[in-house]
Image (cartoon, rainbow, N blue to C red; front, side, top):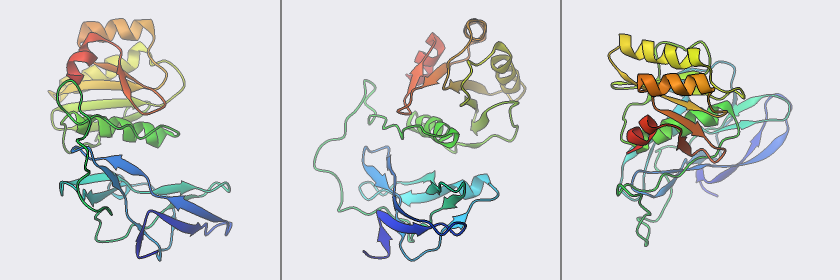
Length: 232
């Protein structure tokens, strides 16, 4: 195994337990699966404080050379420590070149969206961010204003609320998102794992707020007509 690898042996600095970590793959806009390159000789660090800029790593697609930011690899140890896995540089995903087969496309001619799967709150936020990028929204980042619940994302002209809780989203959250977007002259969209209350859905229909539900594969499913139009 060289300096860059798809899997590495990781030892937790807190309990000294050893793990074998495999790098995740993410879908490039061209349809190629891009794997974050891991540094076999690097030392994992315990995550104690989170900063948005430290959550992402730029990786270049081996097929189209497009550079895209993906989540920094992390591993949860059973002792409770979250480990940040070191990434090799230069940060170019391993691969032999373009795939032989044509990438799958959707009805709009876009490469098919490849969901990352959801196991944690962070996965839900990642799925929403990847979906927005797939739709063509660039510079998806953490929003400056933090919502009362969930996680706020932003892109140019767009505010996003991601709710990964196990309760249906209430009417208040939809109204708060819409009001915040109005003050910033931006559009808005809401993602949820547990769906929405009837009052929230009715209010979203009246305000023109697109609502999506994230299934456990990480695929956003439109809940209302505004979401259908947003996805199209």
